[in-house]
Length: 237
Ligand code: UDP
Image (cartoon, rainbow, N blue to C red; front, side):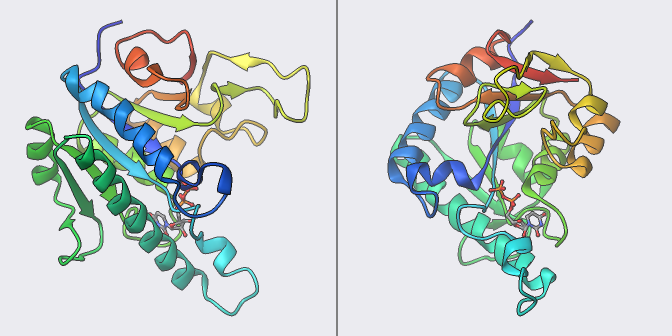
């Protein structure tokens, strides 16, 4: 398969926390920046969505009823902006041009998301980090990632995780869990698999956007996959 020219990579907020489980671990930021730099050096245009789960998620903020779900989701979206600003610093430190674009206007911090402007940045080989989710409560950053990938006309979306890809059941619980190198969108929606939430997968399905799930902590993996070697990941299509 040919090298993809434009990709969107989704990192979970939790990935940024490293071993701590909370907050932002600078060594992870540096590692991600070095992996993204390899892509830019190979003429690949890169959009990024980062979650906020290392700081707060709407559902858990609203758990005991004190905070309303919508407010919790607003807090979650703000968490993604914190992560985006941190990632911007790390990418800039490694010599890359970066723009953060937020779905919610926050002009002292970053640009507001404008699709055509994002396209221009990508054309100029600037990394664009899409922050504040979709700007709406009751959505996730997985759905944001699919949405932005479609808008910027990325050929593929990569969900960068801590595991090698998708299994038919939880490999931590079941010894006989089978690795799935390819699966359909409908299979990806099954409860025991759930690559992403159903809204995200349905959007990818409707727009025929392949979803790649891979291990971000395997050095060189992102570049290898984007160059067409799918031997170390799972593909939902
Ligand atoms: N969020 C939201 N709308 C969006 C995207 C995110 O309300 O379009 C909120 C939601 O509360 C979510 C939180 O932001 O839980 C952080 O995003 P997510 O849970 O997707 O982060 P991840 O699990 O990838 O770290």
